[in-house]
Image (cartoon, rainbow, N blue to C red):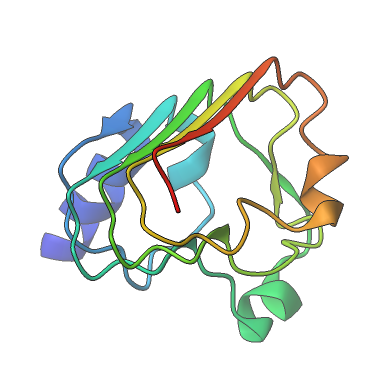
Length: 130
């Protein structure tokens, strides 16, 4: 019963704000309806999109996201927004804006392979990061 509610909730989710932890999220159904991802003041978050090898193997077809904004603010331990190349699991072709601010020492925002996948990116801002 609780699992059905959770799946139903995630499939209709439009945005996330002030969420402290993403873990074991099933990509299918969840990212297709998500329009904005805003992660603020999560003190222990090191990576926003952490894709494991098992998820890459399980993905039979890519998931087109409808994200129009990724906003990451005040995550002192953030190292990366994407940990690895999603290799077609998630497609960010319609994403126009990525903002990263007040994150102490991010290594990079995304791997080079993701850069060619964000075809409609108009604004990428990294500010107040060391």
